[in-house]
Length: 227
Image: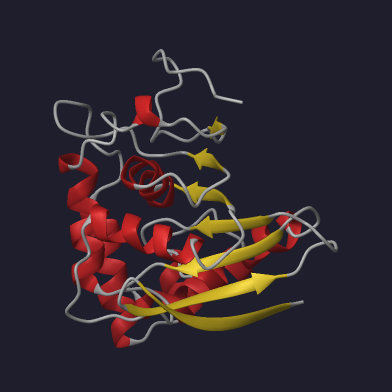
């Protein structure tokens, strides 16, 4: 069973969805990717709730968190994660894609509120590195279409391999993604240097690479996970 709730953290309204785990389970703060409102991660959160008390964040400018004329830089998103973690009991942070980059930067700015990190497919793009593999029109065009109002079948053209449920949720919720917030995050994949932050990860951390994913080049050497 899940329920949504709002808190005031880092100066704005932050919306999260909670899935309760076993009694006494450790807390997990899940930070989704660039255009994934919290509700679209339910199919993952319910599995994670077998072991954790799971809190999935609507990153600012997405879902039901505050939106509009805000700071959408990586540092601001990292400060959100820090402020939210301070309202919790030293959660493990699981970040996917952009969410993993947020977690890495949050550790660099203030690691104290976190118990550890699960970094799932953090884009390894950045200054002087290979480009982020996805193209902007995939994001921008689908957001414009969703803002106008679109059917599941129209959205499927952008996500042909997704399940019916996943495509339906994206068609329903993508319009909540603030166009400017997404553009800033996408550009940040090329301008924000998270690699300088990685050596400073002192808490237990794991890098998780999905099969077939291209945002992390598995052939390149990378630091061993910390435990």
